Image 1: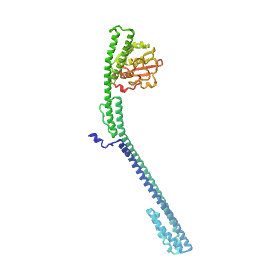
Image 2: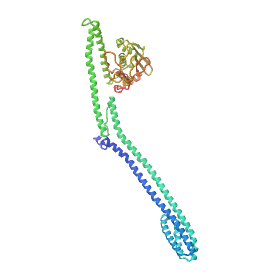
Image 3: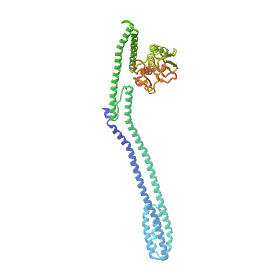
Image 4: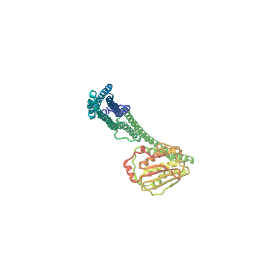
Length: 497
């Protein structure tokens, strides 16, 4: 019930989540674009109105100056020629001046020059009714009138400049506000991007961990259900089905290996026992030709038994076998393994060179013997008839290196990368009546991994094929025993079979 309630707000599908993420991320950017458009529109309107007003006010101030000049010219001309038409022109220009000054008064309500001009207009309006002598005496008033008109024009320009500065300051304020809004809204978009990316990536990573867990064979003790789009939740359910199916197949495989190994070993033991009895003459004297056939049967039976034991070792290693480290002589272990292959080496005609002991080390005897046994078996199976087999050892405080090298056909480059894969067989032909199972080196690599060591194919100047087993010191062995590591699904080594 809690899961259902917590998921009500979540999109039902991945497509819905992506569309919602797109809309949510674009919303702050859309708001930013709208606000930027509004601010630009406001500034554009303010600049347009201010420009129109500035042009109009400048033209009016210049017109006032021209009218003042025409009024003075008409008055002075009348004082000279005394024509009534000049007074009519004077009165007309004065009236125009008065109308324009009233408009200028609204622009500069507190300007003293405008107030002075209004007073002077009243005085100048009296000139046409004065006697000529008084008229001529008062012509000097036009000088002050022109000065106040020029002062009013300068005040108008200063007012226009102040308005331009105000628009510039307003533009700076709008720009600062836009920058702050841009920072805030873009940050919000980034946060939303991160949020929705996390909502999409989190279930994908959970699925990735599930897949890696299935591929490595690891099973978590407690698994949390994926919270996310329906497609990913559905994929998680499919992975559950796949994991359970793989567990069933793994159990069936292990059961098959156990049953097959048991069923094969029982009749094989009877075949080998029967051939041994015939070779001992229990059923009567055998000829030389018959003895050769019995030896062939016994050798093939021994090889088949070895293959079955490899399958059993592989099955055992798949179930986290725990090692039992002990202090042993590596030279003694090598000689014990060589004694098992004495007859095969003799038939192969191989010259064996082994290092001298004692060489004590802390290791698992069974696992180390298994590694050496598989490496020597491979050297016999793939090595050169009448060739050389060398077993070397180097010891330091940090590790022990054992090398098994033989002459013969070098391993192909395309086989090196898959050399330690189970059931993989390279291009090299195995010599002998039986074909290998392809798990010998895989078992050997697992045994090395069991001891926190490493088995690798290395280049050798003297012989064509050389495998090197590197074993860690006793402290690492103790850690390996405590940790009980998983093996077959965690291999990172290169191997060959």
